Amino acid sequence: MTLAAMDLDKAKLDPDSIFHAPKDVLGAPGLSPEDKKSILVRWEADLEALLRATEEGMPPADQRRNPADLLRAVHEAMQVLDRDTSARCC
Image 1 (cartoon, one colour):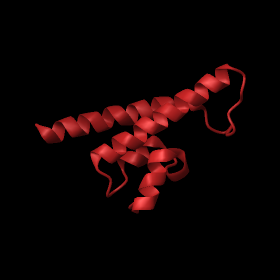
Image 2 (cartoon, rainbow, N blue to C red):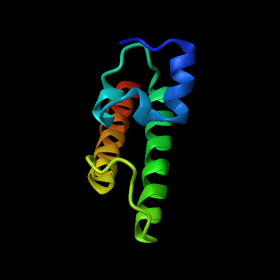
Image 3 (cartoon, rainbow, N blue to C red):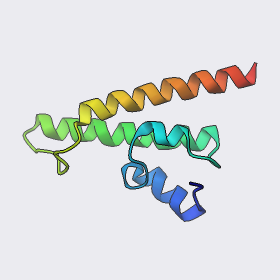
């Protein structure tokens, strides 16, 4: 799946609406490493906010997906992206 400009903008604002899992961001053709990083950073911020809200007693809207597990997956994807980017540059 290649992302059109509008989908890329949407992915950067709401990654969960475009990608099922963080690893899907890594495999998306046509995205630069910077785009992938931007999407993952946004997903991380969204999940951290969701976890804070959950701690304050507000349950997540999507009960099927565990935000903590998804956040771990985002961190793993960011590590893979960093390794891949570092390997390419040197």
